[in-house]
Image (tube, rainbow, N blue to C red; front, side):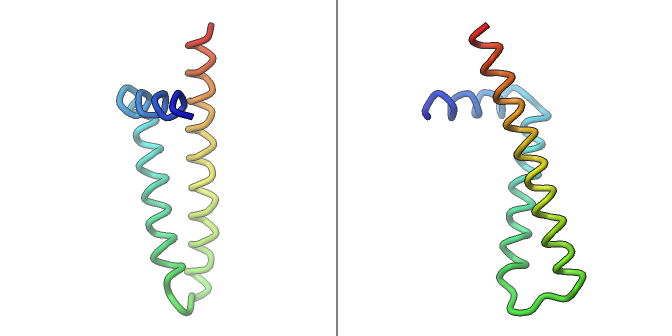
Length: 76
């Protein structure tokens, strides 16, 4: 686990795209927390929640692919 965390931190420090994806993922999560904290959501807000979940998952998948690629390169 510590090896993965170190790899993620190295990618965040060295890779602009990874940093950007990480920030986007965090931003989507923050917006989701705000929307989910409301008692009532309009139809547009429900749509936005769905969109944010998809965007967050896309960012996470891309980051995980970058981690796998970096791990494979390190072991090659």
